[in-house]
Structure formats: structure tokens, C-alpha cells
Image (cartoon, rainbow, N blue to C red):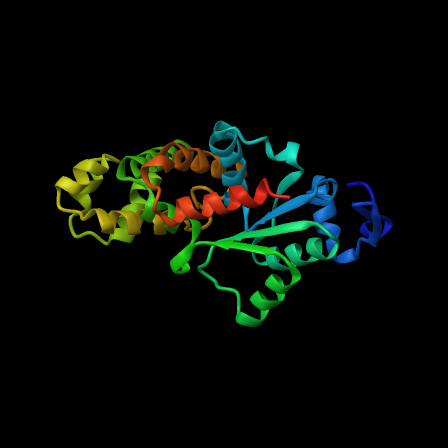
Amino acid sequence: IAELQAPELCVVHNQGGNIEVRSVGSELQATVRASSEALLSRSVIVCEGKTELGMCRAWGREIWQRKGRAPLAQVGTYAIDGVGSNAPQRALDLQNLGYRVALFIDADVPLDSQRRTEIENSGVKIVEWADGLKTEQRVCQDLPWTSICQLVRAASETRGEDSVRDAILTRLGSGNSEALRDLGLDLDRWKVEGVAETDLRTAIAAASTVEPKAWFKRIDLGEKLGEIVATALTQIPDSDLAAKIATLEEWAHGD
């Protein structure tokens, strides 16, 4: 599939003996190249970016399969990188080819009402965080504090402790930043020094998304973040994070 031009491909669906053949348009060339496996699936989760894709993969292993669900591949569901602002159109394109499609996006740049209506009327399931939050903001708001500390340690393993510490301090705008800098990434001691936990959560979320050193903007790092979320999920059953993961689970394993 990956070696062919998109217009050379057709998708064949068999719905209870009713056979339908649809041509693949050139607008899907990028999807054919990057995620050809999606065309061999029944259902596709179009993730906004690499962070969300990595998280989906981790949740499939660490949450859904541990609950006894079949692996996503076994039920014909495949997650792809929607490449940011391209994700809504990619979801529409796949839906128009006859696939079941979910669009998993963060909500910091909301879909306009006309676009949302178009996507929903096509049959695409939209899964997005409440309160207009980015994925990292949602995670930092909902996770228990011990998991936030784990998240920061994970970031420091790839980005370096000094880089992560200084990025948080910059977002805090703390007047006693030198004293905090000497404490390294012992965030519990930062709190003892008078930094409010809510301020720390906000600063960590902001620091984690700053390009070009965003902490989790790779698939493997998104998986790491997803694993941290998975270990804490039973502690936050009433959170928006838990609710949306459950929504994705039900959709991914549905008919």
C-alpha cells in the first residue's frame, strides 16, 4: 500500500453481503504513506499529534488489555498521527472512505461550529478534553500529585534535569527562583518553600509544551506519559481524563 499512489487504491467494504468499492483520493496520499496500516483496519483513531498517539498505544496495553479487552489490532482498530491541524480533515477523509473514525484532539484551539457540525454529521466521533485544555494541561490538572512528580522525572530523563527545572521556574516567575533552583526537581520541597501546588501544576503544564523542547512530542514519550496516566487512573475515577479514556475505550472496541 505504502508504495502505491493513493488514486491507484480502492477500499472495499462488505456490510452483510452488500459490497461497496470506494476510490482513494489524492488528498489521502500523506495518510497512505505514513499510516498505510490504517487502510487495512475497520476503525481508525485519528490522534491530533504524536503525544496523543503514544498515549493511545499505552492505554491499549496498560489499561484496556489489563481489563481483559482484546488488543486494538485484534478488533480492527488502528491509531494514527493526524499531524496537528490536519487531523480533522484526515478524519473526514477516512470517514468518507467508509471507515469508523474517531478524532482524538485537545481543545486549546477549538473547532469552529461549522467544522464541528460537518465532522459530527459525517459520523466521526470527536473525543476532546473539557475546559478548552491541551493534553498536557488536562493531565497536569487531573493526575494525583505523586504522578505529577513522576511525570517531571520522566521528562528530566530525556530533556535533562536543568532544562526541565528552569522551564518550570520560568513559568512560575518565582521571586525566590535561586533558592528553588538549588533544590533541583524535589517538587515537594518547592511546596515547603511556599509554592502552591496549583501554581506548580500550571507551570509544569506550560513548561511541558514549549517548543522546540516540548517534553512529550514524540510517540515513545507520549507512550511514557500514557503509562504514567494508566498507573494513576483508579485514583481519579471522576476526572475528565478518566472519562475521556473510557469513551475512547468503548469506541475502540465497539462494532
